[in-house]
Image (cartoon, rainbow, N blue to C red):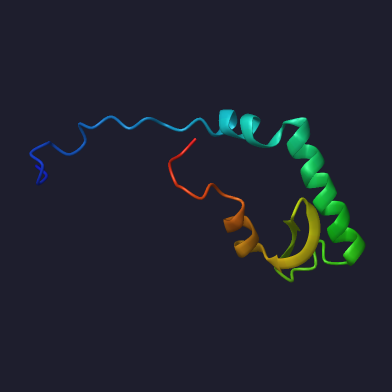
Length: 85
């Protein structure tokens, strides 16, 4: 099968992702563990940890201030410009 670009389908090499390497880099640092522990402690204290309400504790100005929907909170914590490092 030939695509509109003139290249045969299946000839493009796809780099496979190393999920194990990504996990090690992302969540295992002591800073990340401390951050998660702080949020989990706050959620448990307020009674919202694991109750299925879909809310997360949100940081505002360096402190945990309020609860927001999980999707909104996680969207706020991504880089504002995609593809930047």
